[in-house]
Image (cartoon, rainbow, N blue to C red; front, side, top):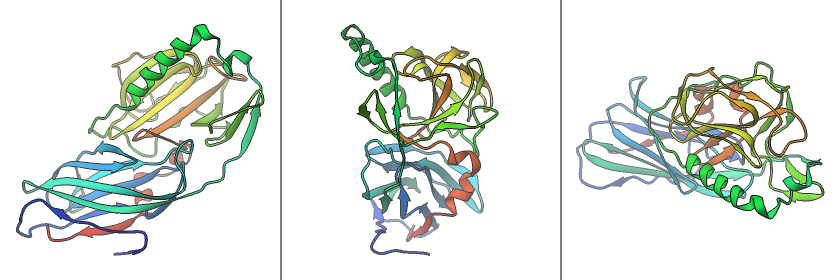
Length: 304
């Protein structure tokens, strides 16, 4: 077991006495870059239920699967470059085994990640909206907030994800601090990919469509829930081929790219949201949950 005492504090909470009959472990990184996705897991030699990981004040339901010599729960997490500062943050794991609840907690040091800046020129109304559009913008923000709070425990995501476009050429990377018409705005919460209007957009994971619409800033939008807090979103679409409640399979065409909303030209905006945190979606295209877990620290939860 690798430990870093100044970064990791493993706490076992036993809510009632129990005979020792199983072993369990948690896996998470002790340090990571802001804006980048990371993997976590719970594993045990015996069955357990109700696994939950709490990160950035959000409790994320996991599911239990067969894995190795016992059971495993996988999770994908991250931190949003727009609103998370460098520092140490607690992560908490909980599960029930043998009728008893257990908790294990640790710390993750989030490091600064350097992202570039870009200056963009857009229609002035997309920087300072007319008063008549403000209520629309507020209503759309509420709809998006509800969609992003979706929490289902069935894991329908598998790694690596299906690239949303056949060719991935970035025109604006995640995390860029943006200046629109000379006015600074928050960092870019997704990746912009080159695409002419009408290019087919495919679902990165299987899941359920939780929101669609043509929104003021994002234009044509699709949000897909794939379980365990994993949500993907596409903006600036010209056509939407699914509706709220539709079940989609990995690789299914869900929309066509366009130039709607606040844009400088046709492209696809692709966002990956993990437990409510917008992270860089591009690195995940070339890795897997197994590879990501190898970068974590494994700590045993004793006396089960």
